[in-house]
Image (cartoon, rainbow, N blue to C red; front, side, top):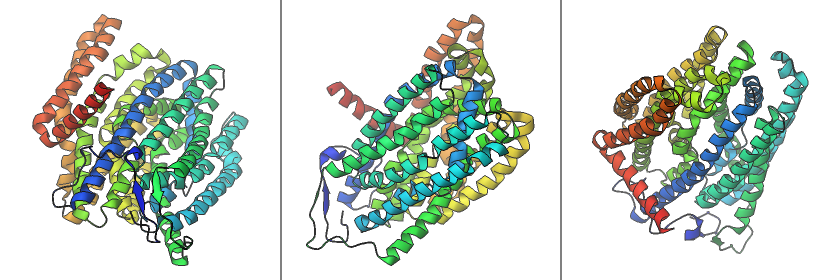
Length: 536
């Protein structure tokens, strides 16, 4: 990968690139052979390391959510969720977005990275100051009875943008180097530590602070280890005879302009995600906010195993394809089809078996969250396409398209949430959110494929095909649960341990006929990594 200033970088296999690896997300025929194979291998390897890391941590996260649910009340969940959401709302230019911008500047990465580091740190510190000043005002606006606790939590949350400013550029360096193994290991161990700390703090009676402090602290720890890894990364750099030039004024202006547009677009997206919590906290109650936040945290776990961090892996891959739009779009479509084939059955089964899941594992205080969890699981059955969609738009520097898409959805969502929150609470807001995302994402997929003549019907088909496969099976699983319900606890156990896995297996088997290419991809991935595990 040339840097444009005389530096030449080469990767070693230890950086997460397996020379023998066969790409499951490879380029279509007609690409340049070596580049296509290298980028496809990087995509497969990067996705694999991310999924392994997430899979291990999801188990710990689910256990910690269950333990914390026994120790905290819905009101405490609500206060924690509201403070984190307010902190994100006040982070108008997310510092992490600097990394997404500089990943697209592969030809002069180093000079631009230096300027980007200063920019990310400046934005992070500025956001901390803004949040600290606004904390008491926001607490007053929300009418918080525990004013001091709410302000204290917001001051803790205010440190998060500072940590993101420290993370942005080191993480971008690792992404550009395709060192996903290091990213996965660092994220995995630090998240495991944060998850453990959540349980410990909840056990000793720290209340909502138990949900807030660990996620702030873990980002500072990641920043340290990312930086250490970039210093020891297995990359040989041949330095030019003259020092690396500074970022030019034109490059600096371009960096700031792209960051401003990408940052505002990301801010709108972040606000759109947290908008239900902000609206419920103001128009409903902390109890309703807590029910929504708890149901949301549970509903995202399975989809997170499939799609989380995929954008981190895919954006540099798409950038590596340069201006080969046809290959970018073809690779994008393969990714979303494979994700849909796996994510949709899992999420629909979550919705179908929500009642036995909650009744068996959680206390009755969470029963009101059952329908909210079911609706949000339906939302997640479409949300799988978000990460690759945003990754492609960013890689193509189509920040304006990304911005317009998110702004339009935000405007519609804000009006809908405000209208339903006072009367229908968490369930009403969850239902509106599901409808909006399930309508918006097919349009977003169409926007990604439009440069190559893609139609809106193609975008809709990405979601309709896996839904048509999985809905009858999920419906059968729900009906089986209604027959088992009179058995009580044994019926719940059978529903979760027998009906659920059997229904998932049937859904994936049917994919062989409805989506043969996606089925082949999934089978190839499963076979390859099963062999690796058996060898160990």
